[in-house]
Image (cartoon, rainbow, N blue to C red):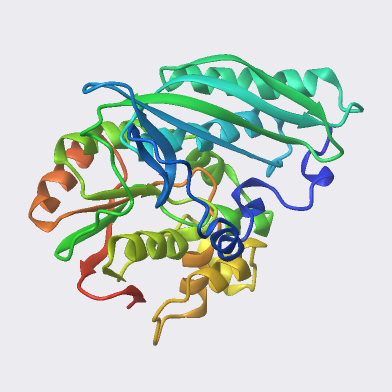
Length: 328
């Protein structure tokens, strides 16, 4: 079987451009004034949102990366999940997707076919249609999607709305990067990376969260840093749920390429936190869960709803007055 990961320098969301450098690159870069552009680059979020009328807005995102597993179908499914989850993180519903693909011509066509077919299946599972795309030649394989979805203009979930007094939740455990890098049993990591955030978003929607983002390449601490900074609050994290094998890998010194870049981008107040806990919080996730900031008086009801649906939910901290991210 063709080794897809052998053709890459680093795969999955760990291949993201440094968040610190991206901030510098985009600083001051704001789109032309547009009354109906509800979410753009000021501040940036998980997707762009454009209002069509009082009842409808378009959610638009794209995401692609090199392979992080060797099986082509699994790669296609993971890449599609990761892109589709941006729409769910904005409170939206996917509608239409287009493939973004780059592959060496030397790869057998059945490899590409398996990637495309698995991605199309995942798009259908999200309630959308894969309607085409664009493929170029490249020495390093890459695949992803551009996704269009819809959301009510009053139902957008920004990452900039966290309020003091909120409780903080996560809908998937952490550690996909560490588990993959350890090169042991990756079954649980693959299952998580191919699980759409659709069910979690559906369960969350009636609770009107203040802020939501999905945890991907910048790690939990990086995405919490974005939420805290853009909301003007301090986020305190006191629990970090881990995938089986992730903390063990961290204790053995396993780190991913995204780890140092995420530490540079999102320093945290972490007096007394263990090295493996910090490694878990900075680990670049692919198709990670939703990070949710919700009024604390809704905590018990939210937990009961997720439990009734058989969905994972962990309370990981709280939102306070102040700035930055603290790990206790």
